[in-house]
View 1 (tube, helix red, strand yellow):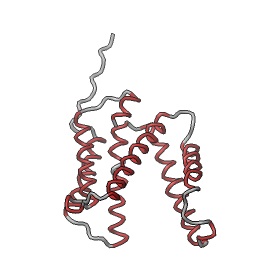
View 2 (cartoon, one colour; view 1 turned 60 degrees about the vertical axis):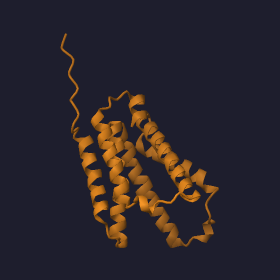
View 3 (cartoon, one colour; view 1 turned 45 degrees about the vertical axis):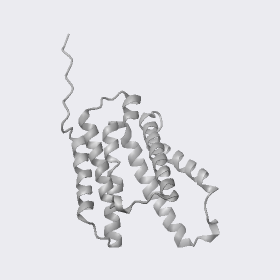
View 4 (tube, helix red, strand yellow; view 1 turned 180 degrees about the vertical axis):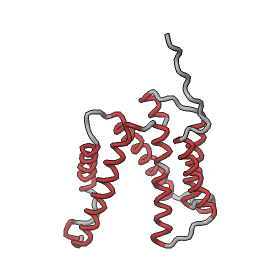
Amino acid sequence: MVLGAVVFRERLHAATFVWIALALAGLVLATGLTGADLTADGFYLTGILFTLAAAFLYALVTIIAKGLSGINAPQLTLVQCLCGTLLLAGVTPLAPQDLTSSQWGWLALIGMVHTGGVYMLLYGALPKLTTPLIAVLLFLYPASAVIVDAVAYGHILGPRQFAGLAFIIVASLGVTLKWGMRPALAAPAP
């Protein structure tokens, strides 16, 4: 959010930081993590570092996509998918013949609907949204994953997880509806 404000010269409000902090707290609660669940072994710390690196890279991709002009959403999605395919081709644990036709069908469906369709919608919307709104809306993605996990796999959500989901929704509304933010004053007419 701060990087986007610097790059696009968007004004940040103190209330925006409060809403983002609330969304982050909501994400922690929604995932069901507590202090008792955390262990500081090497694998856990490596996972945290990879997660932080991925979040930083995702923020950079979002800033780049928001600032690009002259390329439309389907083209940007195609470029991203081709780059991802080339970068991941060398590290896949299976050869193409190791997958059944049914598995290839599912991979194609996920690739076309999720990666293709959703990214085209996302990249089409990014230039029209403010950076703080993009930041808080990105918390809805993991929140929806928690809900889908509960519905699809029958996991029971606890009170803390429901509170976390509520925090994310309230934070999204706070940024979207500009709760606690003063409107910009119009310049006097000459």
